[in-house]
Length: 403
Image (cartoon, rainbow, N blue to C red; front, side, top):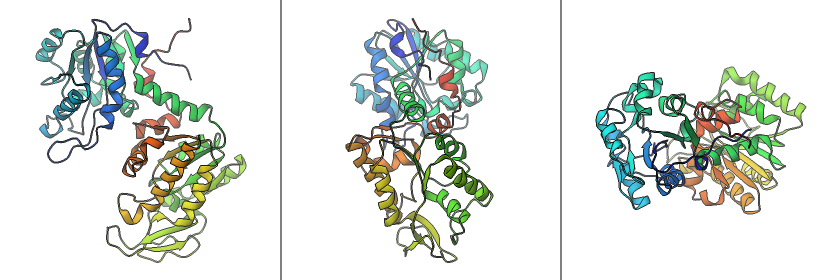
């Protein structure tokens, strides 16, 4: 994998630097940010622009306003949070394009920061509309993409604008993401274990097939494990099941045998008749019949023990997707157990990579984010990267020239 043009390769002093960041942060009902991790992740690139004497023009989306101005999705809280983190004023533009915004940009001094209002207040952002791209491009002289979470989208701010600007590069965050995920796919330390969870087999088929060529062991949990268990003839009651993926699951199990990859499925499960806090639960071995009306909602303690042993004997571990419905305490033990095993493996020198999304949320929920080597900021982007797909927000950045 060739390196991309990097923020440090460009002269930023005195220049208008248009940087795509991912400030799509969660807000409570009072418009207060509940988790600022995405803003913190962008700080190294932002500081580089400011300290280099660049004029830092930040652009991001927040939520899905669908081309309408929605005040509850304004980036005002992000501007305020960034100001606090940098201990420096961050102005918020009234829009992301237009004459008023262009005037604000023209009056910027070196080292100043301006956050454009939510890109998705305009339909042109997600449609990669040429006129919208041109209006954004007029604001900058240099383009930096540091939003890995949207790098798999061919939107105006991730692909269209970059194509119009001669000087363009990736920031520190995207470089870090590409290095860790790239190393996992191309040159992992062995033994290499992948843990895949979440709801659907169909969402992860390409990833499983690609990882099969690289991994020594594959752990499968979450709702997608139900389809594999059913494919082996287990009775799973009213559990989540992809009927049309049963044949695929059988084929993947056969393929693993041919590749010499050991697949670990749950050996015991936590079941309940419905999903809520105060509910009766039963632990069963997978060969026991799950009765009608009951659902598998987590892996059981024996599975946690077995999975934990595999994880702690690994040198590289890649995890994408929880083991159960961890948002509910009754069904969080499996995901917590895997998180703890991963943290211990990392403490012992293993490289641990979380592929964003729900797995990242789980690690944060259990307070173990500081004991993981790398937590990706992009669930969908990391999955597509692992599938071997080209990410539009990365491919538009030129490769480094070998001098």
